[in-house]
Image (cartoon, rainbow, N blue to C red; front, side, top):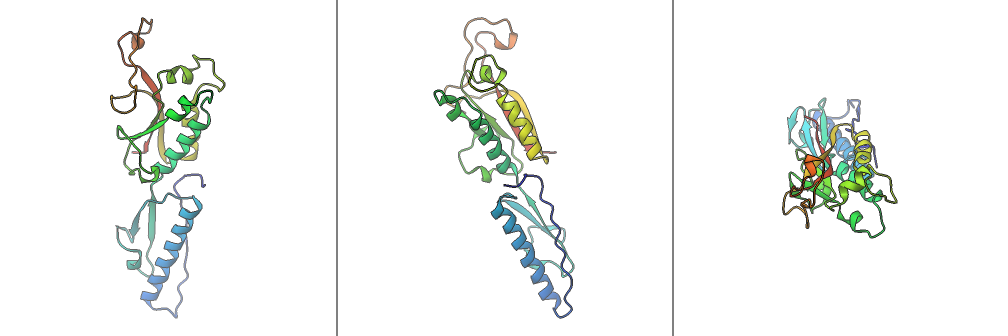
Length: 212
């Protein structure tokens, strides 16, 4: 797996005077496509991208000028979501397994059950654990077999691995229907105003999106 940064590769082709302009264009297109597919196959780039040929979006590579340029913009949101989710699961307590299995991904406020690589590039991705004690585990209010700060740890490593993305930790409200048993309604009395009885609990979550 690559480091998830925007992949910048330059391939220079020296003009072969024995080739026609059409043949040079075809050679440039074939070379670009092969380099793109190699990056995806190795995991250094996401399997979704947009193509710009001589400054035009969506144009086939075969229409490149003999001295033109082909650029690919890879969608790394899916790679980042996979990486962050794997981190959170891997650092979850395993005594019962309920917390570890409860992690979910929401895209633009809705549960995402499809392939993470299919997350659209302009989406807002949320990774959250809807268990009612998720907040206590994350802030260290419960004695666990793992250190606290799972979401913050995920934020730090994901931001380093995917520097082109905006990665934030936030306490969020889970809307009804996003996960079974959530949101949890606080019972009893608490000193903190944000945790008073009758309020919906907020959950530590990782928010990932493209930089604006």
